[in-house]
Structures are given as structure tokens and as C-alpha cells.
Amino acid sequence: MDTARLQKLLITFDGRIGPTSLMQGTVVVFALAIVIQLFALVIPFISIIGLALLYPLFCLYAKRFHDAGKPAIWTLAVLAGVFVGGIILGMLLTPLIVGDVMAMAMRGETPSGMGFRLRSFALGVINAGVIYFGAAFVVNQLVKSDPAPNAYGEPVEDAASINPLN
Image (tube, rainbow, N blue to C red; front, side, top):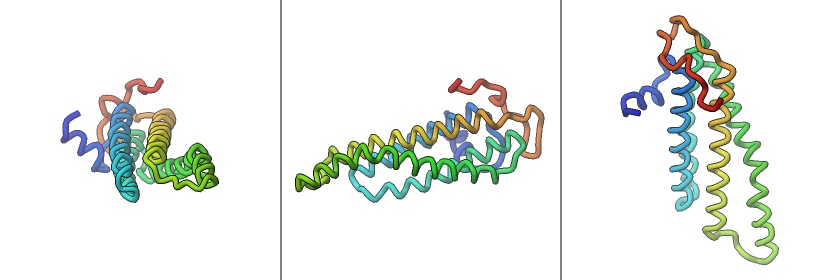
């Protein structure tokens, strides 16, 4: 994927993209999330930068909805689902870490070791992967491409492509 296409995919709201481009953009955003998680291993509070990934996600989903002839406002529903899903999945996965932390606290130890951070990293990557790819999969299944030109532009070449997760 060339840089110009990547910038157009992740930075602009105009135009249309098909299911394959949505998945490719999701892979890029997921890779950025992993890089942010890696930096968070060293500098714990840097993970707040992950909120900046909402912008490229909004761009991706806005163009995907444009491909179906729908307005970009539907993207807010997807991002709300990503946000709420991330919280719920985080709450479900957190006991995998908290159980060890409680046991360490009862023994009088401090859970500040790198093992705790590595587990947090792994769970963060799992959480991001499930949420990002799950949302892309659901949107690709529910949003069908408009085969004709619409208000958002001409049809894209991957509009009729098979969903890569099928």
C-alpha cells in the first residue's frame, strides 16, 4: 500500500471505500494501536494517545458508509459500539490480571514488575484486535455497497469484493 493511498484512506472523509479497503485500514490502525501499547510498556500513561486513533477510524467508517449511500453520521454509532465494546471486553478480561494483583497484595508484594505490564500489553492487544476487527466485520456484513454512482462518488473497484473474513 503506497503512502498517498494510505493518507487518503486514513485522513480524509470524502469518497468511498469497499470492504477490502476497510479491512486494510483496520489493519493499519490496529498496528498503530500495538505500537502505542508497546510505548505504554515503558511510559505507562502514554496510552492516552490511543484516543487519536478515533480520527482514522472515523475516516474509514465514514467512507464505508458513503459507499452504501449513507451519511457519515452513522459512523458515530460504530465508534460508540467500539468504545462500549472495548470497555465491556476490558471488564471481562481484567480479572485475568486483577486476580494476580489481589494475590500479590495479600502476600504484601507490589504488582509493579514487567510481568504485570506484559500481561496488560497482551490483553490490550487482544482487546483492540477483537474490537477493531469485529467492528469492521460487522460493518462489512451490514453495509452493502451501492453499485451505481451516488452523492459521494463513483463506485470503487473493491465494492463487489468478497469480505476477507468470510
